[in-house]
Amino acid sequence: MKQRVLIFFLLNILAISCIDPFHLELEDYESLLVVEGMITDEFASNTIQLSRTFQNENTSPVLLEHAEVSVRDEIGTITVFTELEPGIYKSDSTQFTGRVGGTYTLHIKTEDGLEYTSDRCTMTAVPQIDSIYYEVDSEVYDNGKVEELGLRIYLDAENQVEASQYLRWELEEVWKFRVPYPVFYQDLGYMQYKIVPGENDICWKYEQSKQILIHSSAEQSSDLISRKPIHFIPSGRSNRLLKQYSILVNQYSLSLEEFSFWKKLKEVTESEGDIFEKQPFPIVGNISCINNEHEKVLGYLQVSAVKSQRMYITQSQVNELDIPVYEYPCERIIYHTWRLYVRIYENLLSNGYVLFWVEEDEFGLPIGFQFTSAECADCSLTGNPEKPGFWVDMD
Image (cartoon, rainbow, N blue to C red):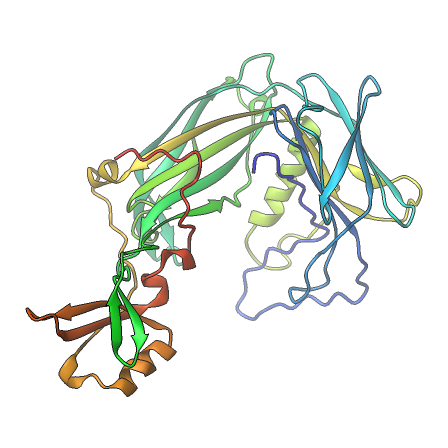
């Protein structure tokens, strides 16, 4: 995930807060090249993704295949990126790694003969992350009507003189969770069942934060980054903190030009108010077409050094705090055998409910059947039952 590209293609963005829905009509729609890519100093493949813009939410971007993609450094060394999947071009990690002080230029040639190039981008050093920690805090929701307690996550770092003055953070969340009603009795049809070992009751869920988190030491007197708030978890609104939670913070160095790009993007995407309060404006990237000046291209090649740090929060740590506990909105339907008919039984199953438990008497005869919705009994519907390779169980 760290090597994925981070090029946002925004031609015009409207931040709208109004009662009636606003429908944007794209009468003069044109398909534009979208370039997404990042070069880092990590020992891993770098990725460039090429696609074409899509006209509306009912269509998908078209990945651009069979292009020639390469990166040139300041001494003229050219690294060719190979198309391993449609529209996905990767470097060989054993042959190419970005380095602090290196300058890189992206070059693309498409099948129709158009050529694109990026500005020259120099990789600056990035400081270490000193610590990540959390404290109990609150945020308001529902237009300020509801205040929710939870955990605020902070970051400390010291931006040394030789490192970049401009930083950006990306957050990757993974949490372990358990469904409230795992299946221990499998339906065989016609009110028949068998006992099964519980499975798909524990899963992991991944989510990448969409926040734009940037920082400029040039705008403050100290190079010390202290108590930088980077994330908030409302404990009563999410199952993140019920078992074990992990957050990976990736800290990237930015050039002044790239910092300005992200700052403009943040201003547009996070602005609020009337449609006429702030006029939309094009966010210019650092990639252009060199053999057709009228050909527009969307994207920003990011060249960044990166430092990362992961933090775990366990169930026992959360239990020590006086914060709300998430409750699953799961319905449990209980029928006793004297009022459960095959028709009702099959109707429940056909409407998305699953049998998860059968209560038996001392002779092994069923005296009660329990049903719930599928997502409350099978965690694989909302997560992944395979434990991540990095995961360490702390409790």
